[in-house]
Length: 265
Image (tube, rainbow, N blue to C red; front, side, top):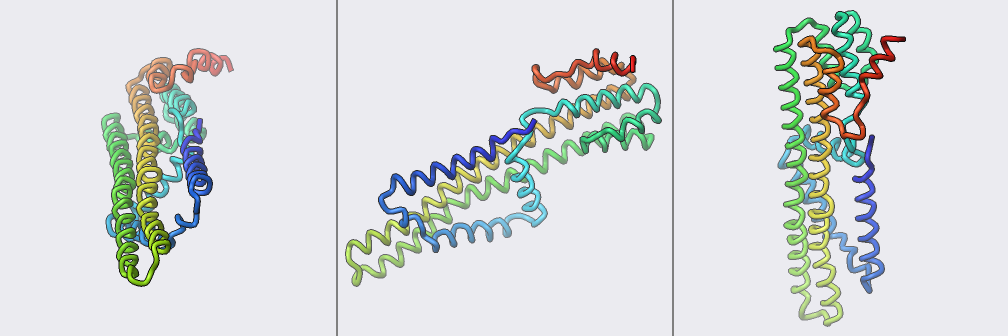
């Protein structure tokens, strides 16, 4: 089941920032510092391109999109399909091939393809373990992109503020106090941008990528354990209990009745 917590969270962030700027502030225009926005946002883009390869940035953007509506738990359908493959394996590779047409989970499809290629159990497990480990590395790399941007944001906001203050100090002789106060407020707004981007955008995105990745790797581990049990010749009910241990208690599948229904059919 997909969760919309990520998308809802950012809608709430935007809403409360809007309220803070338009309702609490006496002059919302003070926050419209286009030079500050340009320095902070432009600086983040340059820093990201300079810090990471384009493939890593693309992967991070895809992860951000997925994390907006992440899976809230391990998919029970993936568990059911894994058990079905285990039951089919007991009847032979022909049955496995037939059952593979019903698979929707990409990692399970990869695992079944290895089985159908006739590889031995140890080789299959080794390949699956390496792919799970590579997935973890990808998640950590994508998290690091967001964490790095969260570190850069306040510094860039401060840099934009300093530039604004330098320009402001250059006008001390000709400007009155009203204009100086207005200019200082605009300059300080750039620091606000950096703090908001760091703490309300990039840091939460990093955590969302992490939580989404944990569920994805947990699903992959469940599939690996189920495939391994099937290759070892364990009964489908045992495979079912193994994969059920990865599901939330209220979402566990009744494989006993499911298998009995299939047999009677």
